[in-house]
Image (cartoon, rainbow, N blue to C red; front, side):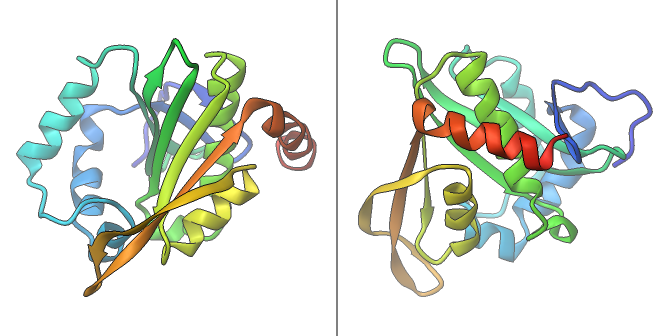
Length: 193
């Protein structure tokens, strides 16, 4: 999706992130209903245009515990979404979730760049201290990019979700600000200059 005047909330070298807009709806409906993408997410039922439109509309009604952003390439292509969820302001923790919906951008580092920008915002603007996430054990790509971003495996929920005809473990991951800061310094030096 190309836009002439983009909102650029978080800016990297190859991508920027902005709030999700109503015109993103057709892309999200296609992506969330894609068989391969669904297997990587928690979703398993079909999602209608009306349901996805209600989800996009609900983003503006959320309190300050959930931030969802669209991932755009610098040339204006919408490629996915990433968010900070369940922000606990007292304990300074939150979870993240992400997907690159446009498969032309899979395995090319766009998710890593988006995650690093989001972690910079979470740690250095929101002053959070720990970010956690999870992925099903067969989602090696998600686990690998989390590790690249400094996450460590904290545990597993054994046989947590049924997908592809069997039950799979959910791998629990997290990264602390203090452990992430040196990784961010090196990442910026190598990739964002």
